[in-house]
Length: 64
Image 1 (tube, rainbow, N blue to C red):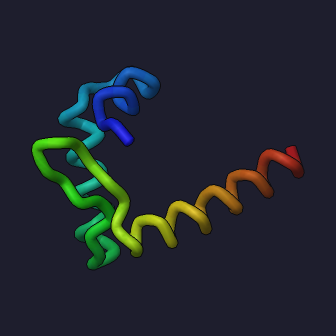
Image 2: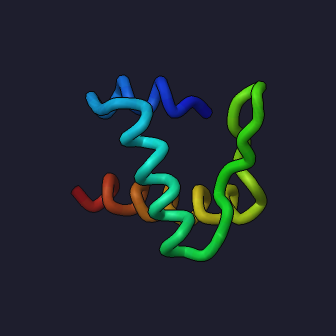
């Protein structure tokens, strides 16, 4: 739950991660994260998307 840690793992800047999240939220028309001074948290829509995407990646991993 950290854009900074995600950026490090992906070898990009935290701003790049934040921008891609914002673009995804705009494309989906849904807010995926709540942001405040303490950090970020998934919204209910973000949690639902995370579950579906995780399942899809797990399936791809099993097949490959």
